[in-house]
Image 1 (cartoon, rainbow, N blue to C red):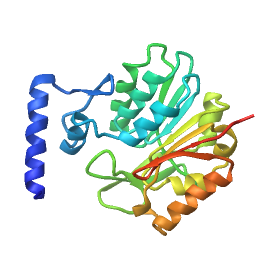
Image 2: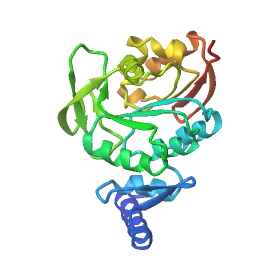
Image 3: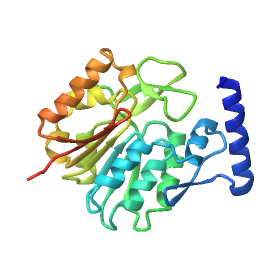
Image 4: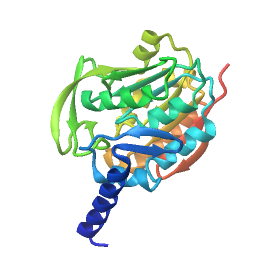
Length: 246
């Protein structure tokens, strides 16, 4: 199908949907608000139940209700809100999103599912450099912003690390949900807390951003398994790993 025709069809579908329902979109039993400026492609995926389907499926299948969650790469908070809705009433949720405008949307969407106010959105990027800020490339949709080279506008954002998040929020064990557009390679190389504190890892990989491509992706998976995790599933480059903790 020609690209222009696909875009035209998606634009018509989204316009028809928003005339009827406004900016509220349904995502597997919850409602999320999607700002007008968010891309038609993302909204189309929500309408057709194709948005982050692998990640959501692993959350549904494997996330314990009573487990605290740290999510890296919250974007507009669709997956974050869904995760919160599936968590128990005492479990804590920390979501990291680099861009302040997206963090605001993410926070609002989570709040609809968080009556006990146990979720926190941290506006920062995950980096293990010694700097207090890092250069972040803002893409043309919420899913392409990343640390490193790329198309878009460069902005400086605060830095955070898993160890700091756990210390600041007094979290001992947590399920890790990670979608940070290639930054996962540095995370799993430089951090060690995931080896001992995570009973569950849900990881979206991005071999197109890796220096070694799919070879680096394979090395990343092997590193996680070597740390004692069992691969619970894989679909479309999204992995779930589990580990029994003492």
